[in-house]
Amino acid sequence: MKPLKLWLPVIIWAGIIFLFSSIPNLKTDLEYDFFLRKVAHITEYFIFTFLLFRAFAGSFRMGGVSFICPAVFSFLYVISDEIHQYFVPGRHCSFADILIDSTGIICFYILVVYQRRARGRLFSEAR
Image (cartoon, rainbow, N blue to C red):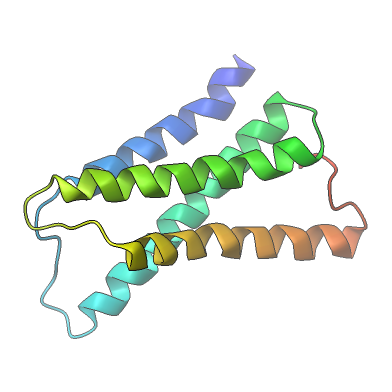
């Protein structure tokens, strides 16, 4: 039951990302549309990385490996999402979008490192 509780949110969130990436011409008529969409991308990958981090920390006791794996998996999903968008009408694959999406991963890790340094346990498992 524990693996399901840890990994099901990861699978659901990956599905949500995939679903939104499948929508052609995903734009609004708002004045700050571009900015809002980019903030949404950063946020969705921040959450995805958090969910992966939680799942890895609860599933494996490998110190630094379980610390790094969520970032690697998130980044690979960023790349696969951009490739997926290449095949969606009205969407495109962009290196700039890979960097923007990866900002969410980086922001999550900045928060984790700051929090763990404050507690003096950089590579111990998350609770």
